[in-house]
Image (cartoon, rainbow, N blue to C red; front, side, top):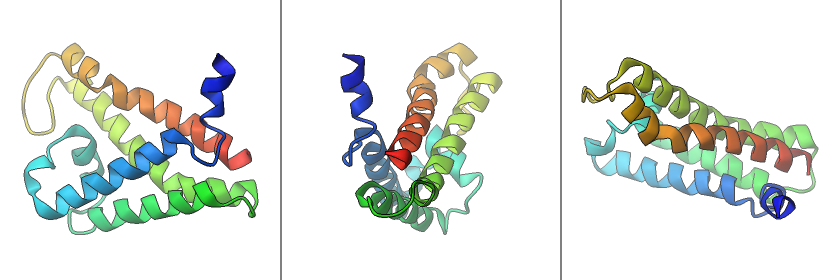
Length: 142
């Protein structure tokens, strides 16, 4: 069974990387049409590093680079790895934002909650950071 789970990270259709690609495009579109979602931890974490005017373009561009990395089988492993690194950077910023919010006991919009509540709420994002990093390396060297 574990080999089947790990196989998902090595195929051309890596579900983990595809998932991040789709989520980043949806988040970019939502940023363009409404500022109401910009307080979400993952989006707010990215907006701490990338200005709002450029964030949708950055997110769509990183998705495009990841798409090329997913369909590319001709180039060297390190070239494919370089294609995935911008997407991993966005996920890293979001995961560290989730950890920061947990430690401070407040969401980025100012809502105060127990740190363990925020941690439990954002645990998926922290786990996705780790799983995506493993998927990126495995896909790059596949």
